[in-house]
Image (cartoon, rainbow, N blue to C red; front, top):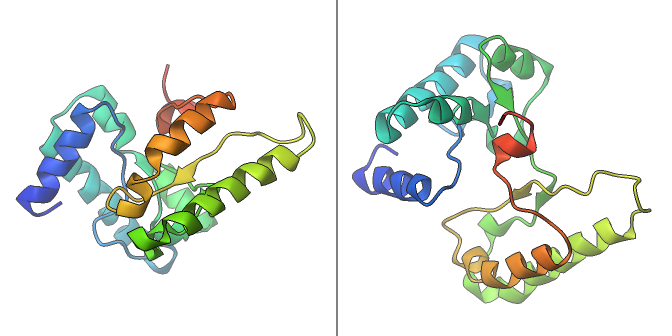
Length: 171
């Protein structure tokens, strides 16, 4: 986000109504950092997001939601984030789209179908059927499939909500 193109992308995403949350500045594993470095990573990112998007309660709240790089988090990191009112959130669906190219479209779609089959195989009412889906906005292969996936998920009764709403931060 230090380049003008990145700033414009973040502004565009936010104006389209998407939640912009915290993913740290350096993308280092938080569980390998000191508490001071963890705080610096997330606070610096929050300040940058506020600088790019402007200050309001929604941006302040959403920038306190942290997707830890690589999903690496432990109790010490959790406690450090909680001490300043931040929440770490991990995903429960990852098809490793960041490793794929557009030529891997069918593979990614099969992974999507497998994920839904696993959810469908669970006994009714036994698990939370919510999907916190990790996708990367720069992956052409993912972007090429969204127009297929979204209607399929909606037809199955899924509702698309912001991450803050999903984890109960929105009123």
